[in-house]
Amino acid sequence: MVFGNLRCFLVKINEIFKSIQGETSYVGMPCIFIRLTGCNLRCGYCDTTYAYEDGVEMSINSILDSISGFNTKLVCITGGEPLLNKDTPILINELLNKNYNVLVETNGSLDIRKIPQKAIKIMDIKCPDSNMSHEILWENINYMTRSDEVKFVLNSRKDYEWTKNVIDKYKLSEITNVLIGTVFGAISPRLAVQWILEDNLNVRFQLQLQKYIWEPLTRGV
Image (cartoon, rainbow, N blue to C red):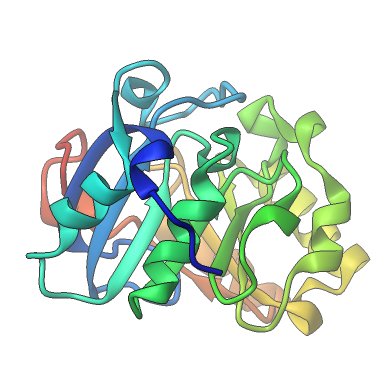
């Protein structure tokens, strides 16, 4: 779908930058990040609280112009929670129309059917230690594909046991790609990998690679 005057559609942007993808199955690849402002959840271990409020309204034309010189075709739409903005699907469509490969990171609490089909959905399933697991819209699992990914972030053994039960209950590994990571500094990645291997889970373990390359609180990377 092609829209007419893209200057009419505004998206509140927290930051735009080029880095490597630190997570997902695309880890290590050069990637443009478009971080939208605003989130409806308040996870206890959130590392992007600066995106709750701060941002500037930008037209979709301005966003496209700002990334045109980055010389890579992988784009990650993230937040905050990008689906809070009604014009996000239009932005995604325009990126797809310009032959970008688009990843959309969403917290799993909003209807993901508004994400254009050609985009790749990266959906969080919030574990209990986030204090937000009650916000999960479980129906979203029905709309995940083999090209998409669900992500669990572990803060404790309790989170791991809960994650294991969810994977089994919904047969997630048969539906989509399943990622498991850890809250940075909370539990040892080595310990989490040991649990995964002991239980022979069909998942991909991931680190937040950017936090090992740069200082963990560094922005714009």
